[in-house]
Image (cartoon, rainbow, N blue to C red; front, side, top):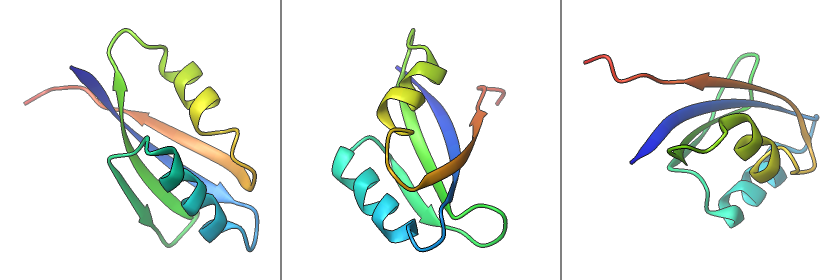
Length: 79
């Protein structure tokens, strides 16, 4: 089983589409959305259990050129 994590990304001006294309090529996401407001992209990822979420995101996602900032939201099975 895997843990569901949402990641919001702020991209450098003019790079959102390039960042999104790079994410798609990595095939690491479940869903990817363009958003309005403070963040440019919203990503839904399933991280394998017993994996360090911070290391996974840092190693698999944040190495993409054009990402300026990220906000990660962990989810918990409550219902």
